[in-house]
Structure formats: C-alpha cells, structure tokens
Image 1 (cartoon, rainbow, N blue to C red):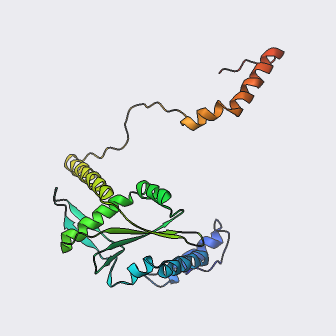
Image 2 (cartoon, rainbow, N blue to C red):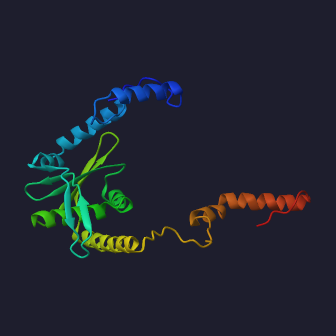
Length: 227
C-alpha cells in the first residue's frame, strides 16, 4: 500500500521515490494508494453484507482457478480464469461499474464483452467438470453507497456469445494459417460529424450563425459565409 508521499508525480523527485519504493516493496504485493485501498475495503464490505452476493461468495468453491481445454468445434487451445466457482455449480464474476441498474449494466456487459467471458467460462467449466453452470454477475457501483445488483445471464445471451466466440476462433485460426493479421481497411474512407452534431447546428447555434451571416451581408462587410 503506497503512502501519498512525494508529489507532484511529474517531478524527478517523485519518480526517484517511486522507483525506490517499488524496489523495496515485498514481492507479489499489489501497490495502491490509500484512496484506492479504502475504496476497495468499502466495496468488499458492501458485497459481503449483500444478502445474495455475500451468500454466493461464502459458499465453498474455487477462486481464480485456471481452466484449460480444447474448443470442441475447432480444437483450438482455450483458457479461462473464473472469479469464483461454487461447489453447488455457479460461476460468479464481480464487476465494478458506474451504474448497476439493469439497463445500464446490460450496456456495460455489451460494451466490455462480458457475455463472451461468460460463455468461455461456462464452456470451460463444462469441459472440465461436465457441469453446465449458470453465470452470475455481481455488479457493484464504485461510488458510495456502492449499490449492488446480482444478475444471471440469460441463455439467449450465452448462445449469442457462443456464436461470436466461434467466429473469433475461426478468424484467429485463419490468421495463424496465413500469417496475415488484418486490422482496418487500407483504402481511403469518408468520415462525417456524428448525427447529433449536425442536428445541434440546425438548432439555436445554427440560427445564431445564420443571423450573423445575414447581418454581415446586409452591412456589406467582410466575405460571405459559405454554408
């Protein structure tokens, strides 16, 4: 745990202090400042005290165990590391988020590809143990009062993730075979402002701009605006 010592961080003094601190720190320890440490303690306390989340994490199980197997459709080497797998057959993943409410967290799952993680974890557990386990998110808001929601990802989302993972594996195998790793298109692309920006210009700001342009024209001063 790092004390809030030498500041500001852009100075050579801070850099020298940090290098010395890291060199003398015990190996295998996570370095964090006091604010991060206190925030982590509050989140942990909130999770433990939640009636569902606390019960899930207090069940007997395995934490962060590494799973390795062959993908059944392609033979590709696969690996997963679930946060927590209970002996009763539940895969639990803790996610820190801005907003744990259903609509917001659903977007969070999509944006961060958590559904792909869910499928890979469930497949890994099934391939190793033969058990088809539900995947459960514990969504914890990072700011006080650290609101918590607990969700089980539905079968439709898991199925969609399975298709996407299979597509990614096929693409990965093709890249390995051809030693070609494509990224973005190599040709010239057109780009435009996002729709909301052009809509804003047609509102109040657009009217002000048009009024100023008309006034300049009437006064005969300056060059005409090109619209």
